[in-house]
Length: 272
Ligand SMILES: Nc1ncnc2c1ncn2[C@@H]1O[C@H](COP(=O)(O)OP(=O)(O)OP(=O)(O)O)[C@@H](O)[C@H]1O
Ligand SMILES: [Mg+2]
Image (cartoon, rainbow, N blue to C red; front, side, top):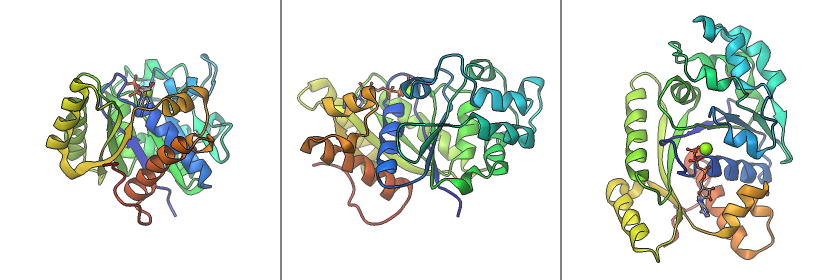
């Protein structure tokens, strides 16, 4: 069976995209799912987190071999390269396709074939080899995010208490609706991350999110040191020994299984 593939959307700038994809990969690992993380962000934050050296090759080289810098798009050639670019991570069952140094150049090229990334991963049989594929995007407009959207089956947008996070999530939803004319990319909704409701400003943003998105708010993870620490230290959140971490990890796991993979019955993940 083909692995479900999820893309995280919303604009550039600390809306917790990388944190969510990475934390869910940790939970997927703990659940025994063979998972491929794909770093589609030219800034390479996800690759950096996993300690991939700055000058390493990766997805950028896959696109180069597919000929995109020469205005071509040969999925078979890209597919030949891709397996050799995938690296393992310290987390059981989780592999990473790093962005690679040349992805910055690729991000400036317009790639007319919106299916290219999906075709490359399909030709390399990666959707068959994994149970789950997670794409991390950089959120800037341009071809790369579009390619990741066509390579995915389901999308969602995290909202952190930063300026414009609500607007960015609304834009992400609009972008998904547009793509749905050509590709059945499911919109799983939004997740809230890092809010501290004792702050008046954050409480106001929180209220606005519910006004705009209503029951499309699918999970809520409050601001907790454990979440940020696990992210910084490369721990799987659910491996941490404190009770709080276990509860927080369950929120990520429930969103992953219920909303992204559409498995089982988990309630709606919102702590009320
Ligand atoms: N629930 C939470 N608890 C604590 N900190 C959080 C929580 N959610 C988000 N954060 C903070 O928000 C930051 C989000 O950073 P992250 O790199 O995931 O954003 P991003 O959307 O990927 O940014 P970029 O657009 O640059 O790629 C984290 O470093 C973390 O400090
Ligand atoms: Mg990021």
